Amino acid sequence: MVLHRAGKPLRMEHVPRPEPGLGQVLVRVRACGVCRTDLHVVDGELTRPKLPLVVGHQIVGEAGDGRRLGIPWLGWTCGECRYCRSGRENLCDRARFTGYDLDGGYAEWAVADERFCFSIPDGFGDLEAAPLLCAGLIGFRALRLCGDGERLGLYGFGAAAHIVAQVARWEGRRVFAVTREGDEQAQSFARSLGVEWAGAGAPPEELDAAIIFAPAGELVPAALRAVAKGGVVVCAGIHMSDIPAFAYELLWGERVLRSVANLTRRDGEEFLTVAPLVPVRTEVEAFPLGRANEALAKLRAGDVRGALVIVP
Ligand SMILES: [Zn+2]
Ligand SMILES: [Zn+2]
Image (cartoon, rainbow, N blue to C red):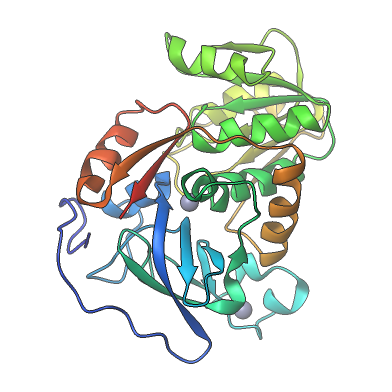
């Protein structure tokens, strides 16, 4: 399913099977998770994709020797810049990203630099594993950046939040989910995963940390207002609408506001070790490859319980 121009639907095309280059592995795609970032690419909010492009960066694939490999968003880094040399390859100046700079997984076959692939833990089906590779992984990195505060708020309860909530509960945290007004489905889904309060507006008590998954800038002052002194607010998306001006008082008291960008391979290894221990259970809805545009439309409409997964 190929993107030719932002704002246009993906087109089903028959293209030659990709040839693996030096250090790359060819996989038969078994499943590819749908991420909000895919939408930002298709809708043109991320403005520099390679074109034509195959989107998708939560790929569970089978290599020629039968191994199940996970191909994430971080597809390549230079290994030489100051970020790469200081354990921060997620910030690499020359990083290439799967499904943006490199063809991704809305396809039957994909190639990837083997050094950036993960092995998929046993006990996860192909579909169930796919959302671990970005929703889970970036959510996990965001959770780490929250510190060890007990009361965690999740703003937006989609694919990432439904995984993070399970990890946070397993760590002994109390979890609060803030959803859109009247989104009963997301609220009851959150409660079914051990979230102690789910609703719209301000949580019933102060939070120690908050992760904002929804791409809505107005949630930033709202989350700052909800965290206690010393609390952390992490913006976990790659794109967000503008943040409205707010009083310095909301940041005062050593509150911290930060973003989370991409992932390191170490994040992936740590998360894929933790996920089977929790154990994380992902809720997925499958779409055949030819219906990828429908899956994207469903995500755009916010009408998703858990994660959407494309299956070739
Ligand atoms: Zn680098
Ligand atoms: Zn993603």
